[in-house]
Length: 229
Image 1: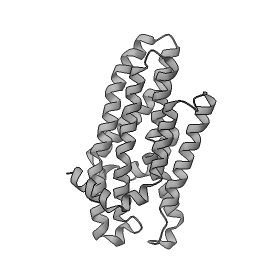
Image 2: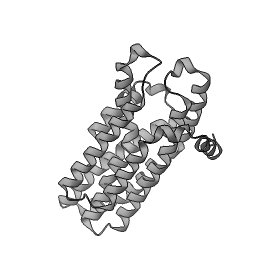
Image 3: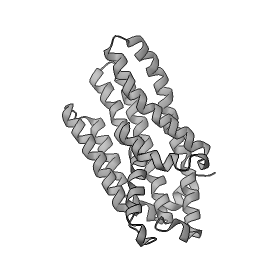
């Protein structure tokens, strides 16, 4: 929760009043989802199972909101790609391929998130399975928030070279950090071989290919045809 909030803090609160409604809704649902993953284990282990089950039903509704609001924001990536193509001085190193890549990796990211939540429902009577499928969602959807924060710092450190700034190293560092945290906790809780662990690893490894995916003309045409405002 702290790492995710630290990552998104400046990007979200820095231009709070200028953000679209979909951004606010997604931020709030994502934040509440992380909060739920903190309070639900507390209820389950402190004799409040009835409250845990009730909140679990609400949580499934919340998970759907996280997933759908993330997908609803993809049109903003397409618009940003179009604007960056015509406003090169303003966007600097952030070329159209970057925003196309962001939109492309968000699709498998949110599909994996939804799959993990569904598996947690299926295995709700198997404590460790249920728990780890839900915990894996933390690492599946962490990249956009943490990546923005690290990218802001990284780009700021290269400000004197603007617009000739390398933007991908910050993504690689972010993914390395997320995978390291994921594998550490999987090791700690003896879940290195759990399918949820490898689903989260696969999503984050896929994110490393954001640049070649975003540069692909086929991917760009597909996204423009699929995502309409």
